[in-house]
Image (cartoon, rainbow, N blue to C red; front, side, top):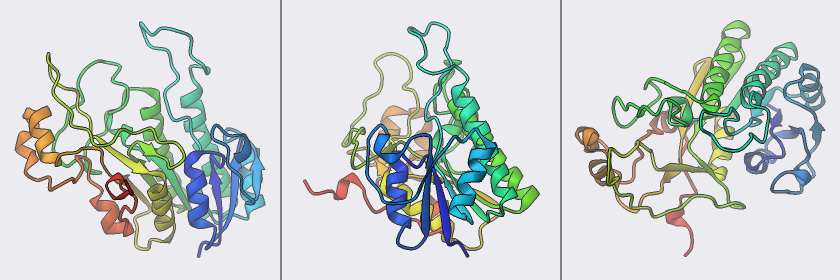
Length: 304
């Protein structure tokens, strides 16, 4: 039974809501390179905090030991690619290998520390970009094999952020096979935060005047629903040793999804009638079925 939870990326936006969701039921400790009060969007908390770096095995072990963690909610990552691409203007803000180094090695060191110290379960924030919907370096269009997309759809990432998250999922699966640690990857759809609204709602997208419209899912997930899914993942029984789940709150579309698919992506029109109402092009049915996940915070339900 889980009692003590360590949250990595503990100064970040998702951690803010995951901590609030978990703290009444679990002993929660935060772990990050900066404190919550020093983050990009500072917030105050009385929860225990460990200062350290994911890419240090010693720091990961120290954080897990301090928390006496039997479970980890792994939210720490670089959330974008940092490598410079041909024709790109400007100089990258971070070292070009930062995303790959922090995301993959950070997850490896965390999992290595977890197996050394007897952690039972790890829930990680992954991304729907694992599909290959991130930065299309090749300029070749993303190929949709069917709708709605589910966890069986092929993954074809190109940029380092997307690739790093595929590798992170493989690390979780490997540590489950080797050490029997229960692992869950939540493939988040464009996180939106109550303290930082960055998503436009009520869209009615139109096709491009020239050439095919690049595929987009037009979905997002509220940070509070991410927090809910983290808790449900810690509590779920009967999961496989490693499980991946797409996670969304709603579409951002003013119209029903099938209408938008037929207008924007006529080559996918044959799948449109399988989409009902505002159901997303990327399905969350597996999370509903196996975690009991039901989004609570759609923009459609907010007070005007």
